[in-house]
Length: 63
Image (cartoon, rainbow, N blue to C red; front, side, top):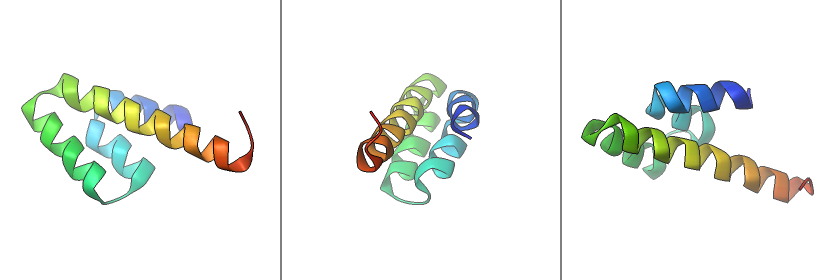
């Protein structure tokens, strides 16, 4: 599922963020960035997905 989220974050940034964190401020920021340009939205989406996975690994003790 992680690879799917990264690909969606690259192609359809708001969908990748939605599948990662759900509805919240991060999703609305990503939608705004995507409206301003596809590249800023994609960069933000990849960053959110990577940070979320990193945080889950840290909480479960996997580094």
